[in-house]
Length: 125
Image (cartoon, rainbow, N blue to C red; front, side, top):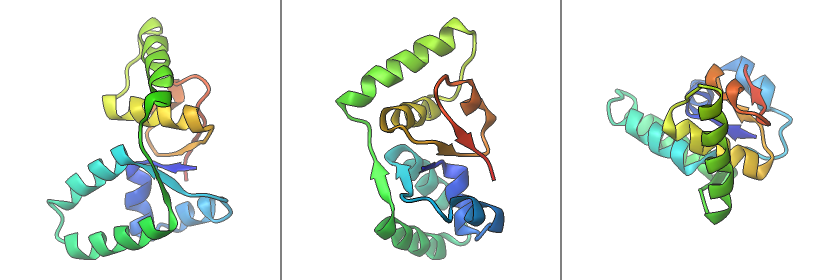
């Protein structure tokens, strides 16, 4: 499963509901996009050093997915599908959705706009 940025934040905060939801996952992933968003958020955090240490430890156990040439087809298809339905989602989340479809993984997120992406399963905690 792919942890969205808000799931990373919740995991760092030791959210029990989230931990229960992901406990049995065979593989935890995040994306390069989520890491960029999370690191951006850390720049203004009073707990920056603590959270950077947490992130470093998390990344030792998790896999980081990055867009590649294979991601392009899913990205383009998702953008087209959303345009046809008159729906939009943030650009970064379109890339995250494309990675999720490419790898056949659900996205763990509190962002309901992922629900508009056909063939994508969103898990909320």
